Amino acid sequence: MTQGLESRPLIRDMPADERPRERLRMRGAEVLTNAELIAILLRTGASGENAVAVAQRILSRFEGLAGLGAAGFGELCKERAMGEAKAAQVMAAIELGKRIVHAQPPERRIIRSAQDVYALLFADMALLEQEHLRVILLSARNEVVSVREVYRGNISAVQVRIAEVFQVAVRDGCQSIIVTHNHPSGDPAPSAEDAELTRQMIEAGKLLGVEVMDHVIIARHGHASLRDLKIAFA
Image (cartoon, rainbow, N blue to C red):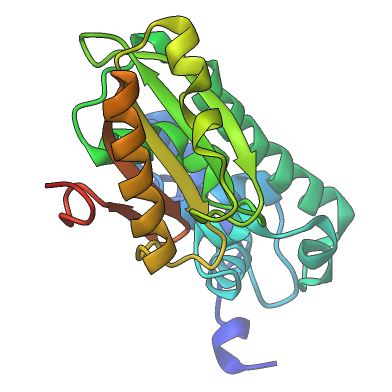
């Protein structure tokens, strides 16, 4: 065991205003670091590591919260000082966070930028292991009417049926949509196939009277707007 691990104090031996639980009670959860929040879930550490140190190590191992959210139960259980109970607590907390995002009524959201699209769908799409294509239906005021999944698989102009992208929009009388899909690789950079698919959707939308406002790619490491990048959009 390294000297660094041996020197870490137990949380109960830390000053009261430095302990995660007390800091949360006195100042609110928003001031705590990710490691401190996870430490509260873990409750205890291991020999030579307090709960905060364990949380920091796990965050580093999975490259941050996004990677931790994508980790499987078995992967977490293999980490030192975790075990099934702590792994279950962490996974349950992450899932609750995702559900809180979905519990907010989407019809109240107004989309003003690709960042708004990313905020709306990141929790649900960024960590998917397969490509999903979804369409955001917008009102005349750019309010989110609904989000519909229209395709799952290899997202390309060859594979996606363009008619399916517009079917719901035409049926519900929406005059504008935003198309979005995820990159499981984690890199949001648009591919040549993404550009070609976007061009085909824009042209089809003109014929149907439905404007494609943007095509936003969501990934673990960020997002990309084809409109902002001036790809396929004039």
